[in-house]
Image (cartoon, rainbow, N blue to C red; front, side, top):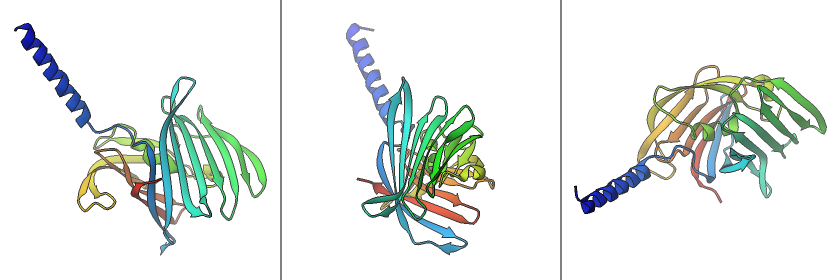
Length: 243
């Protein structure tokens, strides 16, 4: 092979490798802010629809990569009534979760999950107490489940096990559920799109029957169905990029 032919072949292979890399679907949830339309059922009755918003970002601390999810629900005044933040260290599964409640029962908390324990101050009805208890690992708060699942490898037939933590008001530790999700392929139409697209569906078993639809082409969380208490359900559907 001549030198010129070898250089041409190398250039062709490099170009092909670049095209192949570009064609591969992303392995993580898109970064940015995204809007969701939310509906719900409580004791079999439909709830008044509302809005939520999720922001996903990367960060770092002490040389470790961080996965940050901000979740905001129910507009009120000039913002949202309920705000949550997850700061997850993917390498260890440890995280900090924060919550601010400006609704009918104001409160806040900042809890850390490390070495199989959850701890931190919880303020509710003007009273602050300290939580310190064991929790099964890996664990995740439910508001961030979809984003984190969308940021891990998925294949039909996979089984994903973790502890799902509602923590809606910071007092849901006793309601932590074992989530055992099985992955399958399906299709779902995206917001304002007529044609369905390929998705991964992660569906939990009867112990915690949450379900998530994740687009294969860009890992966007398109839909989530999340149990609420013992007799309710919340359904979130992707509604485009937020502002």
